Length: 229
Image 1 (cartoon, rainbow, N blue to C red):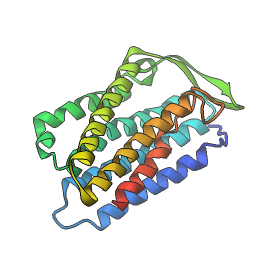
Image 2: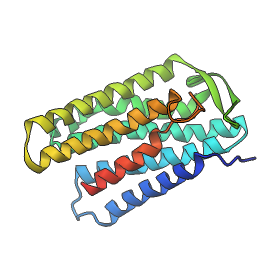
Image 3: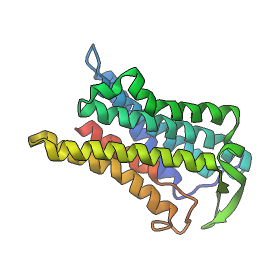
């Protein structure tokens, strides 16, 4: 399998190592009984690490088959994060009623279905119409037309993120002291990856418009902020 060194490979690898390190540190230093907050943080950090590592491999391979293979792991990371992030937010603000089996099923049913479909149906044709490698800024990157399934899952993740932003925003304005400041920091930590990913796809950050997603890199910063809190 041939590889290409892209400007995005090193930052993604650094993000992956940092995310896995945060997850490992949390597990090693956990209390004996553990907590939903701790394990949801481990979920955020580890799935962000999987996303970053897989995306680094996807961008660095020069074959379409290799790109689509590593892209499967990208979707596993994204699907896992779609479960772990709301779990962390709800644990942090102590909305334990939402973490019950029935209510929390609203957050994991779609990501689990996506993860299973990625490995049974495949990312092509599940998410991509006529995927191909195109030249973007001198690098061979994945080009495609999105399917309704891809647009639907992206819409789902945006809806989940907006829900968590609403929960954090309410916590920031309804409480005071340290908790208010921490909720505000979490709000920024959640918004930043979404905004950076949208900026990358729109071509605001790099000339490879529409081909590079900076979300996993940003989520390593989110993991750092969560660990600091």
